[in-house]
Image (cartoon, rainbow, N blue to C red; front, side, top):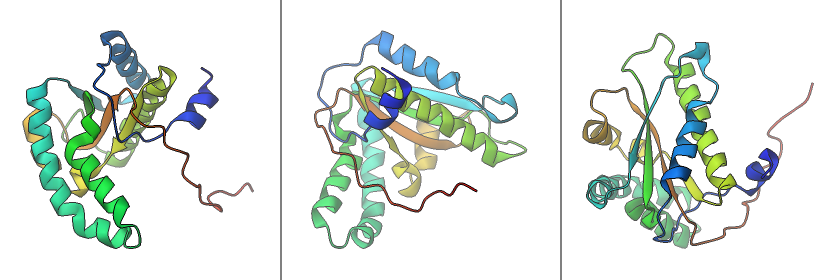
Length: 191
């Protein structure tokens, strides 16, 4: 697949089949992540891959708390779309039954310039999403643990000796084929 095809074809997948992700595909996705550009060549990322049912259940318990905390926001944000509230809550709570979750952390607890470090982790995440798409896998980038107030608990459970949680990715074989959402206009200018 061409890079542009992966960019255009990537979707946020919120429902997965139970088919496992192969070790080879997972390794390729992680290798793509660590090849991302990084500010001052910090390479400030650390990834925790969750595959075991026990660890996934522990994560889902935390996500249930995040879901509860996010409900008021979702009701405001999607006030005219109650179905979206329900679907979003179900996805965050159960992670779309994804067979894999990847937690993205900062490698260290402190950086002299934290925003470039976080941006570097974000670049690594995008590499993972595009590589997953290239391999015919679905993924979704989530900030719900942070927005839902359980980021510290996720950190303490899965990477207590690393820096803060930046985001989470669900990964697996898509059980849905969502359409591309409408893109907003006026988001760039060429001068």
